[in-house]
Image (cartoon, rainbow, N blue to C red; front, side, top):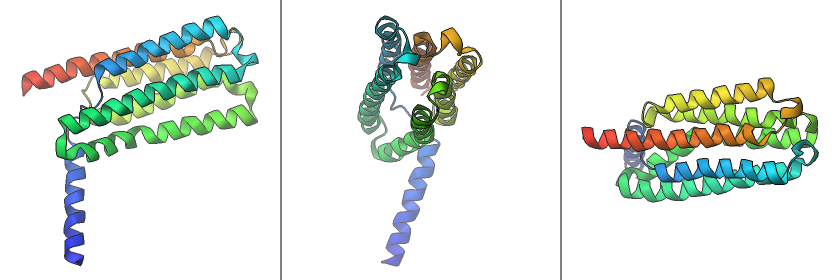
Length: 205
């Protein structure tokens, strides 16, 4: 029984190692593009219905957390479906590897949001920049199993987040476009990278 367990553990380790070297094709370009459009739509809604977000942080957070939750749900559902269809026997390992790249940034983003909301509400203007910088870390971590140009998307999110932290105070505090433009352009960029990256991989195969 010990030998059997060791053999199964070794097989699982080999499968995980193989999965780490295979390009993950679970992310659907169309769904990623939809999430970019959702970000732009949410920014338009904020501009119209939450004109003073620093005075109504609950409305601001509800809008953007809700948008993020819907986007994440869409991505997860399609990733699971595509991974099972495209990666077959390695689907579970590929999905686990993909989740690992974004788990830490997402958890960090949630904790920062909770801390700033309850302990330093005057610092909420920093949230867009912090969210974008954290998201860039997830993108950079994922570049080893996604098409190479995804690195440029990570740079975009990092630059956008840094700009928001540098210039996001005062009249610009929690501006709808601090979220709409970075995530709208960024997610559309991810969709383009995946679309053309997958096509190239298919042509080279």
